[in-house]
Image 1: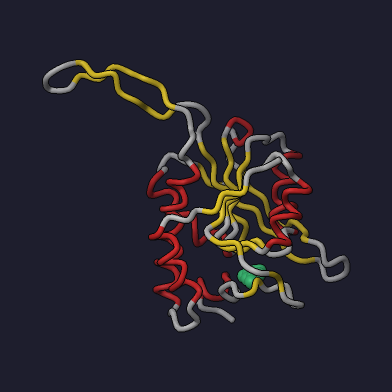
Image 2: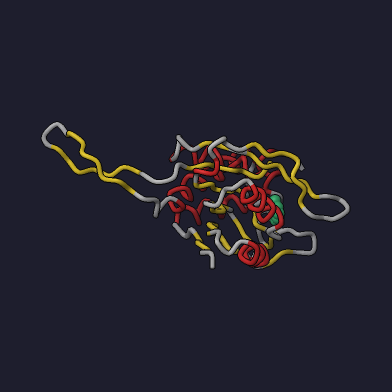
Length: 209
Ligand code: URA
């Protein structure tokens, strides 16, 4: 079964409070999401493997650590996922970035992929699918399906806020995928909003409504 990791670092929780606040303006919202994404990148990379190399300091030879293993790829789900990319790249500047665009099909109400562009070596990378809001889980599941169909099988999911319904749906569909979130909220409302959540993440990030 996949791991659900709630990134409960006090700075993440503090910043999340202001992200939730409806009085927070677009500029501050964007900056706070960026900062939380950086802090969450620290958590999500906590267990990546290290190699030991020799490095010559001014006084001696040291056995020193460097990151090894799979390179990273970030895959934001358009459009709200874009708001977390730069924050992660601050810590992991060598990560490549793919994009997945999903829109709700008006007839089936299911997510329909309208755009996908991945790094050519995506299969070799550890991919982090990014979507601030894990609501029903439909978009995250569709994005992960799409990556798996393309042969990518090292995937993690990073969200700011999740509803229990979304977590369960992703865990049922993809029991191999670890999920990293900053908060697990109460529930979904009848419109599919997370309660208490933060409203529409894309609108708040880009100043639309
Ligand atoms: N997407 C959002 O932006 N907000 C929600 O509450 C649910 C899905």
